[in-house]
Structures are given as structure tokens and as C-alpha cells.
Length: 470
Image (cartoon, rainbow, N blue to C red; front, side, top):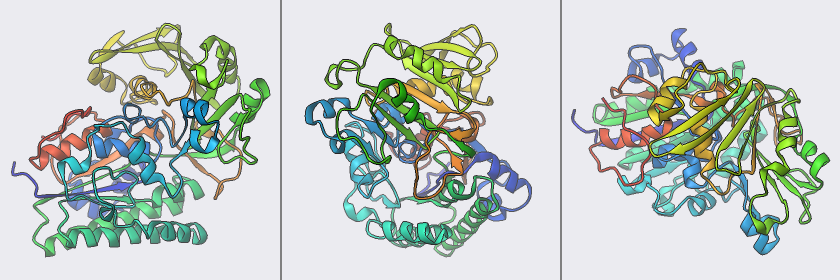
């Protein structure tokens, strides 16, 4: 196959795979079907965990899992930094600030693969991570905040997508070899109105128009057959009907608890930190004998963690054991797991917490994906293990059940959509591409090496995904 000469990647933030398929089956996405899915089938992948914007963008841009890169959530707590400076500002990281790009660029592990390492002339639209590229490569550096503020005030997030499309067109006309574009409407509208609301479905139909105009533009330039176009998403969403204040429950047992964006924020003297991401998962940190003494003995919070499962909002809890395992417990049972070279060991204690059928005790990473991809919790064991790689991840992980989230304080809009967890609605994302791909399950970390192969480039060292190019 002749390598493609340029690449355009569209990240449709928060888009669900099943919604794409349903709309395609109904004939509502004619342009996407013509150009990216001629057989009418939407390929799907399992998103990197946690399934939240920012961290879940990184697999497409690096071929690595968020936990490997040190991004265990859209919020996380830096225990060593707090021990050193005793400052909330220096110890709580947020990727939902005007500084998200510089924060992610600085936080991600060194010597990580980047888009710029393969495509030096990459240009970005509404992107969160641009390491290796000059500031001018982020085409929306000065326009993103006004665009998003307008979207918040007017609730018209389709205009933000129009802003993204206009910037993407400038990059195409400027001959960029790789264009990475984020279209925010499905996520923002899903949070505001619900992920399957009429307003949310309109964002998918709008994206169909974006694809139609994109290929028309490429055809006029004589580049439709030489440009690789890939459309995917960082996560899906589930509908939310009930808010659960996890931080208040933690505070009732452990004392003063810090939660980002709940005011007033205690500047010091807190015994625990609760940081939900996507509102469907939360990193929880405990002071123990001191923030400067490392993670506390899990036996000090084990009974509390188990007690959380008595709340109907909580789905799973997970923590590292003293002997090096990662233990996960749900309403249906418990399991412990650990990584081994090339794979993992997964030992069920009683009943499987994810409702899986019998699984091999030892699996390579591909077997783990194949055995669980079509379940209610696709690739959950390996996803959890990649999260646990990061020293920034919580002492305790809590995920919410479908219909619930883990916060009850005010946000800029009342959340009616949740993500961040292990559920299929959060983890299954669409993969649409104008090049043939191998059949079978895939992860979002596989998209990066796939694009590298399809454009005939050299794969950098350190990539964790596998190419799915046919």
C-alpha cells in the first residue's frame, strides 16, 4: 500500500461508539459512511484509563497509556510536592485551567514519543498536549478560551466545533503534514443535556457535515486519496441522574478533606484528598502518618473502602496491597492482579467483580483485551494496572455506577453526563478511518503506531500500542 502523504486526526471529544453505530444504521451519517465506513460498520477501540479528557488524549499522541506517562486523572495530588512546599497550589494538579497545555507538556514522563517526533510540522487545534512543537503550532492558542466561554454562555457548542473546523482548514491550506484537531461538542453537550439527548445527537450529525466538507476540500486540492483521515474519541459518556458526595463520606471518617473546586478549600491541615475526574472515577489520597512519608498502609483504609460499596453510587474500589498486588472489589466479588513481563496475572476471589466468565490466570495483553473487550467492563484489569503504574495515582480508586457520579458541588453547568470509569459506555470509542484496518479488538494506544505505519514513517521507541494497519 502506498503510504499516505499527510494525516488529519479528528478527536471528537466524548463521542460514544454505540451512538455512532446507531446513527449510521439509521442513515444519519452519509458522509462518514461514504468516506470512512463504506461497509456501514463503526470500528471500536477501548480508551486508555482513566477515560477523561486530557489523559485519554495522550494515547493518540504518544501511543502510551496515561498511567505510564504520569497522568492518572484530570486532577491528581502530588504528595512529595505538598510535603515540600505545604501548598495546595503546588500540590494539586488540574488540567481544566488555562494552563492545561503547559501543565501536560511539563508533567508527562520524559523521553515520551510525541507527534512532533514523527511529523515535525504537526499543527494542533484545541489540543491539550503539544510537546516537541513550537508555540505557533497550536493554532488556537489565543482563540480557544473565547470560543469556550462563548459556548458556556450560549450553550451553543456547535459554534466551537465550527471554530475548530476553521482552524483545521487553515492547517490544511498551510500544508501541515499532520493536523490534530479536537472537536468538543459531544462532550460538552453530553454533560449539559445528557449523552443521548437530541442536543447531543445533533453534534454527531454536525460532525458528519464536517467530514463531508473536509473531503470536499481535500478533493479540490487533489489530496483526497493521499491524506489519511482518522476520527476517534477519548471517551464516551453515560447519563447521570444522581450526585454522590464522595468527599463528604471520606471527611466523615478521616477528618478535613480537600476536594478541588469545593469552596472553601482548606489550604493545610487536611487528612485526605478526593479528586474526581470526569466525575465517574476518583483518586483518593490519605495522609496516614504524614504526606512526606509515602503511601499509608492500605490496612488503614481497607475497611472504609469496603464500606463504600454499601452505597448504591459506588461501583468498584481498588488499591495496592502490601505485597504488590492491585486489589479490586465490586458488588459482585473481588480480584487481585499484577503485571508480569508482557502480560498480567488475574486471580478472582470468589466471584469476578466485573462479571467476566472464566479467564486464564495469566494472560498476555492481547489475550486480556480479547477476553474482555465485548463485556460491560472492557479491558478493565489491564486498564487498572496501567493506572496503577503512576506514582501520582491515588491510594484508593473509586468508580461510580452507571447513573451516578462522585461529586455534588456546583460546576459551570449541571452535569447530566458522566465518564472516567471502566464501563463500556465510557470506554468504547469509535474508530473511523479511510484506510483498511485489521479485524478484532484494539485500544486507543494502537492508533498512534497505526498512523505511523500508514504514512511510512519510523516508529519511535517507547510506544506501547500495536499497529492495526492491514
